[in-house]
Image (cartoon, rainbow, N blue to C red; front, side, top):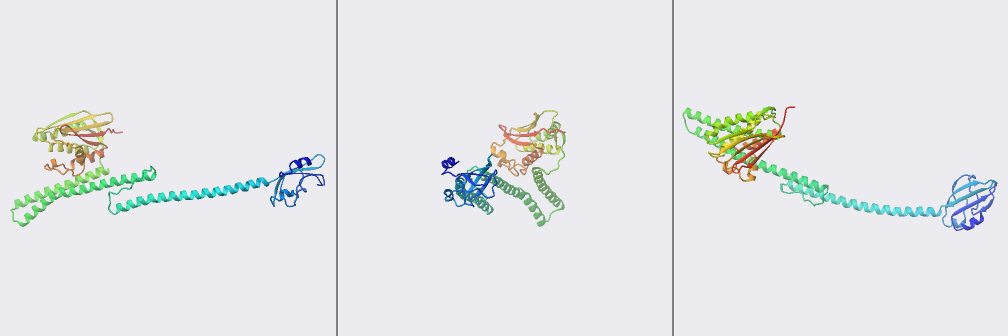
Amino acid sequence: MQEQVAQTDKSSRLYLLVDANQHILAGNLLGWPEDLSCGQPAQFSDQSNIVPSKLQAEDSDIRVRALSTRLADGRCLLVGQAMVEEEGFTDHTGYLLSWALGIITLFSLAGGGWMGLAVLRRIDTITHTATQIMAGEFSRRIPDEGKGDEFSDLSARLNQMLDRIDELMAGMRSVTDNIAHDLRSPLTRLRNRLEISLTHERPADEYREVMQQTLDDADQLLALFNTLIAIAQAEAGVRREVFTTVDFSTLLIDLVDFYQLAAEDRGVHLSAQIQPGITRLASQGLLTQIVVNLLENALNHIPAGSKVTVTLTQQEKSITLTIADNGPGIPNPADRLRVLERFVRLDAARSSPGSGLGLALVRAAMHEQGGTVELHDNHPGLKVLLTFPRLKVS
């Protein structure tokens, strides 16, 4: 025991061997710990000054972990370890962790503040742009910083929305201007006719004629407004049309036959190539309105000696209706898109009767039927291509 103590004199290991009466026989502890029974593990502090003085100098409050056991001859052996190095390591580790936590907290606060300022700056940019737009600068757009993050996506979507709103506003201004232009002539005629009738004495027959002309102008205005309402309802999908199984081939043959006489009067050759037996779940009234508008549009805008061909074919998933002529057509692709808008009339058609709503009504009716309308150059002439998805009664 004494040899072991001598070998570990400079360490923090503790030994103690006592007899049955707790008289020290060997070891480097100065006494048996209080309240410790032999054979039990123990953890105690140096309250009784039993730890060697070399360890007491390093720390005023030494903690010891020890094991004790009773030997066969009744003696008790205690082996322990003073927790000096371990406590120093724990204190040093705590000190380092405290500094690390402080540095991490500092960097976190700095990074969070920087990110917060960046977010606020970009929100301020969006707010500033919105304020400019509200002040009347409708061409303003949110600048894209090109970072590819959520704010860039939001800016792109908002700019797309603003572009769409700008297009709708421009369309509304154009429609308003065109309505004012197209209503001015009939309203002016109506007012002048009534004013002349009131300022000059006329026979009863002439008064009746004036009233009849006034009624005709009023009917023209009512038809114009009814067409506008029909277009708006069709585009909004609020019209309540009854869809039934319609024999499209028979309907088209009847309409072509009906317009044969009008075509002959204008010196136009009207022909049809209609695939028989094509049926579709649709509104017969809307289909009739679509074909009538397109046939009248073709007959009104082509010279005598021209040809109009109506073609109806069926594919696996769609039905195609083509009305083509060899008249002057619309050579400019941009104009072929514009004429589908309301009140758009090209210069060449200004002298022809109409209000510029026929093709707009066709497009709205096709939208309601779930189809599409496209205008193509027929080289020469115009080709109107209508595509209907095939719908069947379930």
